[in-house]
Image (cartoon, rainbow, N blue to C red; front, side, top):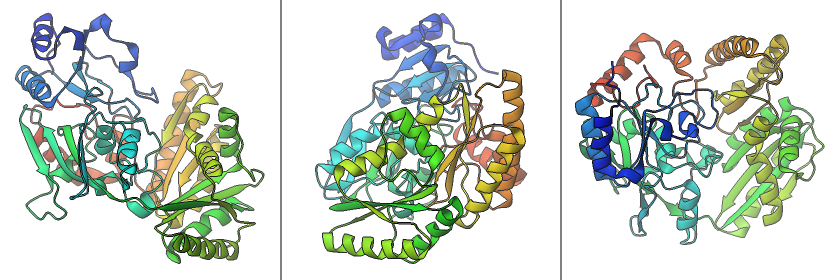
Length: 464
């Protein structure tokens, strides 16, 4: 279906980016064959590092004319194989396009190239008293990858997901043309929202070469509450009540003793009050001490009324950093505890979380597979990990197949969706197809055909 990359193609690409920015066949490092989770693997035929949007336009024009597949990559921190070049071809690396182009304080926007890291965005805007709210767990991910997967994170319960913070995009289409969707404007009712089609499309419709992000004023004060419960059911039941009946928290995280122990062991540090079965970790922000203290007082009282054993205020920088570092280390800790893992990134209505997690534990016992989990209970997004441990490759594959089928089936019965923030990529395609059905798949394939009639951009992902 696609043209294999030959020496003549390599020479043409070198003329665009230069010899130092291109690696061919055996020159390509193995890390570019997979993402962070490593469940999907395939080597590209050529690894090209782009420096600017003009080069990307020229590369896509050439690839389009010659029917060569192109897969875009940023930091490679994804978990569903979206940046893996499963048809070979060109791996287009945007990590060097990492300039912050403009901070516009009047329009409250930040314009960046796609390779800018999330942590660099925070550093740039917060020292100016401004705030970019999306808070995905991997801070070394690129903003292009965040936009491509519509990344969520812990602050989504109050501030929304990445899509809510993208004002405008400049995109190179598969045929090499450069187009701008949206801009710095606050409101836009001008035709279909092509910008929002690009957000979350996982590199299948166009290549983001510039993004204009919405900013707000940085909240002046923050505090967290660590709230232990006697069991997981009480903790999960309390979460929506705290959101419904009180000023909205910035984050509502669910943790169990087992997950804490993984992370504490991995990081070599413990959180205070770590001897309870289940916790909610709540975060609040505000612009005055009095307003924040009022919120904390009301939330603490409500938590105790909802069955909390106690409420611990996390108000010093040292305590906040310690607890949130342990929470942020869950994924790496679980990875370190097993020879191999695979993940379900399901999102559910909050009312069904407790019953669903009870079913996860049933499946764990039924399959005799260790399945730790944690989640953003504030927005219903759960991260469920299957651990290979000592299983053989054959048994592991069988357990994954059966376990994923069972858990996705139950999630769909509860009104859930395949992914809350990590995307579909290659690994989760069949589950999305089962959930959405033929008509919605037909509509999405029609959109793909309109943007990319030759299907050269990130082929094999999401809908194919």
